[in-house]
Length: 75
Image (cartoon, rainbow, N blue to C red; front, top):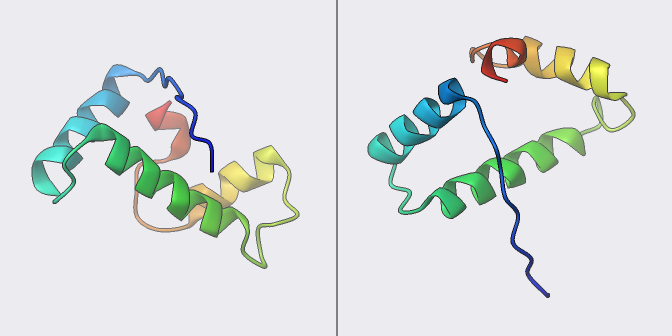
């Protein structure tokens, strides 16, 4: 597999959450953390209940799932 670099831009709130996770988890790099998060998201999106949702419905589903901060407050 040929790997490509991706640059992420994020809000201060997202950067703070990223830093906090890196301090509290056993993740050694931002790349490891972002890769794990992307894998989890892709698993979620490919699920039976979510695979056919449009973007807006998918965001609503993410907000209904779990106990995290609503998507609109993270971006």
